Length: 160
Image (cartoon, rainbow, N blue to C red; front, side, top):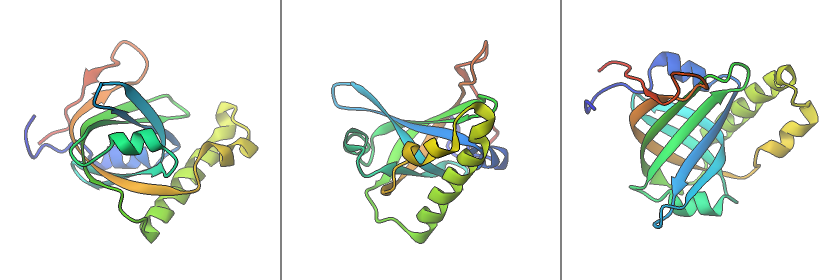
């Protein structure tokens, strides 16, 4: 992987702003996996994300210490297009900012607007997302297509 390779380009930044479901995958010291729903994902630059996880996601928070390997999986709920980034946590446990709150509301709103098209009743939306979140920053070093089908698992290269 080229050190300055762009792994979150503008097209992918637009994708993550859409009606998506996002997960953070972690593992503990014994390689026991965990996955938790993210309540927001935002591009910081061509290789870094800011993600929001629930304050109640104890396992994910314990596993997502600075330097820990993690995966961020983002799926468009209307098309099932799925992209996975793998990388390392570079910042964890910071205080929430006004920008984080705006990110949270935008994420939930985009999901909520599209949910009736895929059979998720509007009243269910509030229960899908936590109300208390904390941010993590993730620097990514690999990008994969995880859309269901024959190309799932294929590494994507977005330029350098």
